[in-house]
Amino acid sequence: MKKEIRIFFTAMMFFTRIPCPPSTDHSEEYLNRSSKYFPLIGIIVGSLCALVFWLASFAFSLELSLLLSMVASLLITGAFHEDGFADVCDGFGGGWTKEKILTIMKDSRVGTYGVAGLVLILALKFTALKEIGPSFIIPVLIAGHAISRLNSAILIYTDEYAREDLLSKAKPLATKMRKDDFFIAIIFGIAPLLFFPNLWILLSIIPLLLVKAYFSRYFNKWIGGYTGDCLGTVQQVSEVVFYLSTILIFKYFG
Image 1 (cartoon, helix red, strand yellow):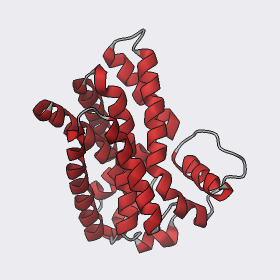
Image 2 (cartoon, rainbow, N blue to C red):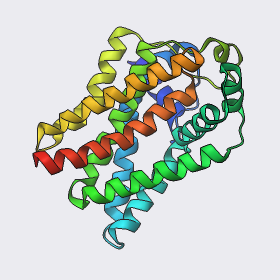
Image 3 (cartoon, one colour):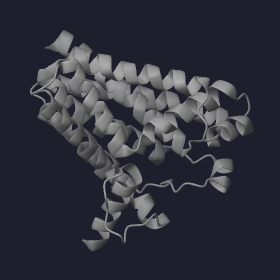
């Protein structure tokens, strides 16, 4: 049990700015095992964002409450996934070879592609959540943060880390996943969907799997695998796709 608690806090330290016990570190063993808790961390992050939205809604408009919940998400995670998404936009937008793409993604500076990508994806999140409406925003936030991180975990399970990046990476990263850990991640990722009154919401899994399949093929084609930035990109795009899918499911299936 103590080992599992430490593995969980490793995931918490890796994905958020939430304080963890001093003994928590980024050991390779615990980091690889922690990937099963990525969707659970999503549930925690999504719940905190939903709490901020709920509290803010007593005093502010829907729009302002949504913006405050998005600010909370950035503060809680340290914009971890957004940073990876911006790096991928810059790398794949400005690089035409594997070496160039990986070099650009390692650059801490954000370029035009990265800025444009961030603006658009944040705008999509805000607009989609606003269209979903206040009565469902809280469960949608929790489910969206959880299942989008599950999609990143699936990429870890099915794909290989880009070899050249593995030799030169400076940041710790979970790069392996056991079969039993993968099933645990699936449980945490799908569980929030089961609390929706209409189980048609499970249809959102289909476009999310298509997102994963697309990025898996795209990353393998250009850089021979994924990097940490690629995982952040899959999470961000999957979150938006889940929100958009939810809008369509509510519209056509009640």
